[in-house]
Amino acid sequence: MTEADAAMEEDWAAALDAGADPADAKGPDGLGERVLNQDEIDSLLGFDMNDDGSDKTGVKAIINSALVSYERLPMLEIVFDRLVRLMTTSLRNFTSDNVEVSLDSISSIRFGDYLNSIPLPAMLGVFRAEELDNFGLLTVDSNLIYSVVDVLLGGRRGTTALRVEGRPYTTIERVLVERMIEVVLGDMTAAFEPMTPVTFKLDRLETNPRFAAIARPANAAILIKLRIDMEDRGGRLELLLPYATLEPIRKMLLQQFMGEKFGRDNIWESHLATELWTTQMEVRVVLDEQSVSLKRVLDLRVGETLMLNAGPDSMVELRCGAIPLTQGRMGRRNHHIAVRVEAPLTPAAKRAVTKGVKR
Image 1: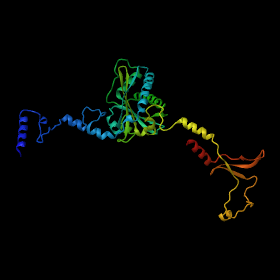
Image 2: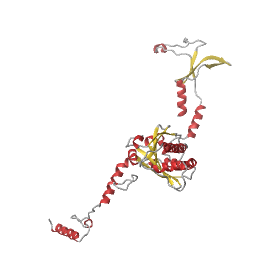
Image 3: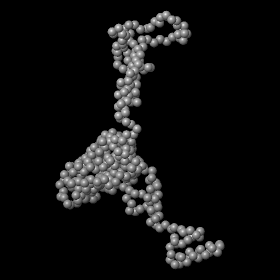
Image 4: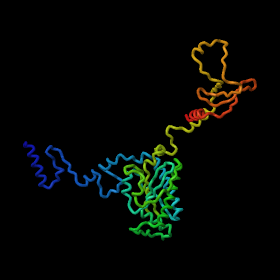
C-alpha cells in the first residue's frame, strides 16, 4: 500500500467519524461513489407500492416496451371522442337524468395484466365485432352498477347509491346493466360508422374475469377508460379491444384524419374505368382451326384451296387476342359480312374484363 492510499483511507475514516455521508466522500480511485437508497432502487427496478399499473418505470418499462403504443393508431382518439359525445346524449335519454361522460385515458396493456387488475365486484360484458370477426370486453365497476340501478328505479337525487357488499348481483341489476351495455355498444357502432361499418353485439355477461378470457394473457390490447357522472353518483366504464380485433381495420386507424387514402385515388379509378369501357378493341372471328404438319404448310402454293370443317350454319368463335369471348353465326347485312352473337360472354372473358377494369 502506498502512502497516497493510506492517506485516502484516513480521510474516509475521518469523514465517517464526523458523521458525513460516505457517498459524498471520494473513493480510493479519487472519484465520488454514489450509493442508492431504497427508494431509488425501487424506482430503478420499477417497483412501486402505490402504482396502479398504468405507468411503469425502470426494468418493468423495458420489459413492457414491446407493447404497441395506441399513438400509432391516431384515428382511435377521434372515434372515441365521437363515442363520448354519443354516449352523453344516449345515456341522458336512457336514464332521464343529467349524465356527463368523459374520456380518462387510452393506453396499451397486456390482456392478462388487465384481467388481474379488474376491481371486483364488477360486471364484464363480452361483445362481438361482427364485421371484424372477433371479440372485445366492456367492464362496468360496482359504483356505476349501483348508480344506474338507483337512477332507473327512481332513487332520490343528491344521495349516493346504496352499495351492498358480499352478495351476487340480482337478476334486476343484471338486466338493467345489460340494457345500458347495449346502449353503449350501439353508440360504438355509430362512432365507427364514418370510418368503417362495424356492428357490436353483446355476446354474454360475466362476473368472473376468468370466464371473460377473449385473448391470450400475453396479447396486447387497447384500454379505454371512461368516467360516467350522474350528479352525485357515477362510476367507471372500461373498454378493452385486443389488437387482433383491430387488425382488419389497422390501415384505417393509421389515418391522420378522416378520409385519408393510402396510395389510392377514387377519382383516378373512376376515370380509368370510364376510359376502359370506351376503349376500342379488335375482335377476330375464327371460322375453323386445323392442325397440319409444317411440311404441308411449306408445300402450299398460290391458288390452292383449303377445306374447312365448317358450314354456312356452323357456329363461329369471337376472340380478342387469345381470349375467347363468345360464339355466333355468320351472315350478311347490307352487303357486308356480319356475325350475330348467339351466346353470352364466357367466364374467361368476364374475368379478363373485370381484371382490366380493376387495374
